[in-house]
Image (cartoon, rainbow, N blue to C red; front, side, top):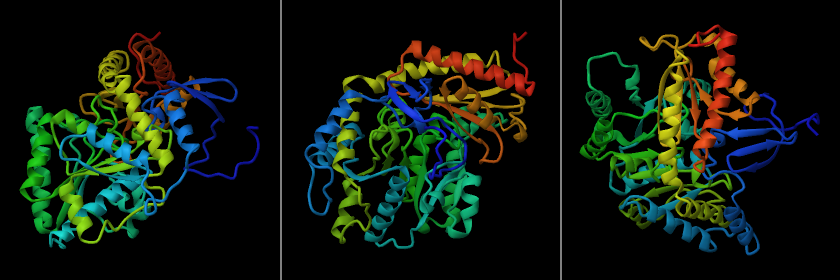
Length: 450
């Protein structure tokens, strides 16, 4: 029944049909309508829906035990998933702590960093620098490091107020610098901020290697990444990569950090790590951080469902499927196809001002003028309207405001890593239909339109 009263509440009253089933990159509602999951939900369903291997592994674990509290028992699924995760991450990241989601992972990373500093006699280090815009989670600790005004403004009085630097949105810059020089310019902002705050007070720098929802798949110039690592090392500031969205193969590497040969001190994982089959996340760090904390009395942190055997069984099957099916390689290959298709749209739709991304984490941004990169008028509510027009046509995409949450419109396309070129073309046909409808509603120019 779709007309029965609902006692649930989420972010809004926006009505949606009941989900019936998922198959690969497709979802079906109870009326039988098919949708292409063009955003993998919220960039979660990396290996697609209803994967038989994952379902079988979860069912097999259900027949044995569904819960074993970590203080009472070790479990093979959690131990095996930890070993598999370490094997797939850069050398030096060899300790894993499981959580149930991305916000929990970020919170855990912050607490590990702080407790490590205390073991080193550096109790003055408590500030974590992040970027604006950014998104790191909805719990108060993670939200304090999130640069997205609509989400955090109501809760500002409840938070400490951590320092931030500008995200490297070089596509908006109108200067005479090369991209390499721009990358270094943005990296030096971190050094300046550390000095301004006092190096002895700065604990960590938290960043998304490829931007998520708040910046729309923002990729910095290559020069940025190595310089950030050097600056953190110079001041003994821990470098934390929030790979909640980018990790688990999404960008064409298991970790996005691998594109630039960077080994962060701590990595936060979730979303595609469990791929929607179970609530699952993790932090991965080096023994040099973890062992002193354990020696000092233990990690003062934890969640009831940390290392749940059902969730870890699902996560292990997800990683095995990625390896066996070559899905990380497919993300890199199909990412190139998708980016080419999206860039091709710019000739027809002058209001698409930028296309960006890495692997199968891609985005396009609307503008009023490509020369100035002036955003569309906020009154058009483009970020919401295009999503609805696409949904009506059977395509699910994800959007946010680009400029700190108050202006600008970007749209994420991040389909499951199993997608084929033919399915990308199918997705693009639906997207073009939605773009044409949006242009017709708003009076925006379309090249070649009648």
